[in-house]
Length: 243
Image 1 (cartoon, helix red, strand yellow):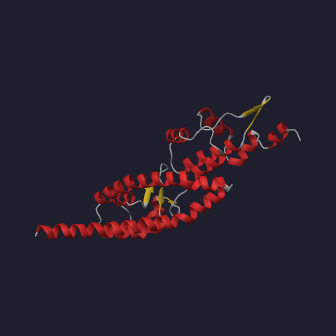
Image 2: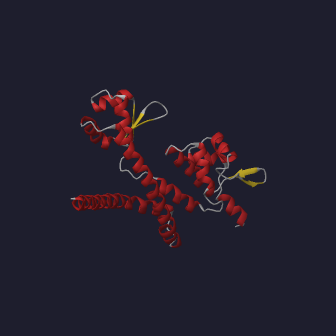
Image 3: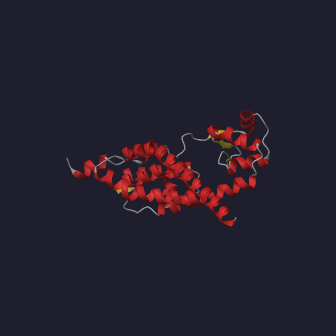
C-alpha cells in the first residue's frame, strides 16, 4: 500500500478531532492561533490532525481542569519541546493528575450549610480555604474536600485561628512546590526513560503513578513525623543547655 495513503489513514479530519477530544471547532482553532497546538497538516486543500494534536489538546483540557488561566497554559505549553512525542506529552498529563484520593465535590452555599449543619461565616470559610478544605469557585459555588470537612469543622469548634491556617498554607505551598518540582524531575529523568525504552504505553505510566501516589503520601507523612520528632528533641536540648 502507498505510504502516503497509509499515513493519511492515521490522521484525523477536523470533525473527527472534535469528536475525539470533545472540543468545539471554534476552540480548536482558537488554541491553534494561540500556538497551544500546531497548525493542521495540509494534504492538498484539506487539513488533517495527528496524535500530536490530540495529545496537546488533551493536555490543554487537563490544565483547564486544574484551574490554569489561558496565560498560565501558554507558559506551560511553551516549556514543552516542539518535537515532543505524544507519549512525552502524555507524561505531562500524568503528572498533573490529582494526588488526593477524593476529588472535590461542588456545592452551592446552601448545600454547604446543610452539609455542615451550620451557617458558616466568612471567617469560617477563610479558615477552611486556608486548610485546603473549601474553595469558592468563579461561579460563586464551592469545591469541598468532603473527606476532610469534619476535620475542618472540628478545628473551627476548637477556635483554630485563621491567621495560623493562612500561615500554614503558605508553608505548605512553598515546600509543596519544591517537592512537586523535584518529584516531576525524578519521573522525567529516571522513570519515564525506562518505561519509554521498554515500549510501555502512556497508560502504563499513568497506572504506575497512580499506584505510587499512596506510597508517596505515606512517605511524606513519615518524613514529616520524623522531622517533627527531631525538632522537638532539638528544642528540649536547647532548653536544657540554657538551665
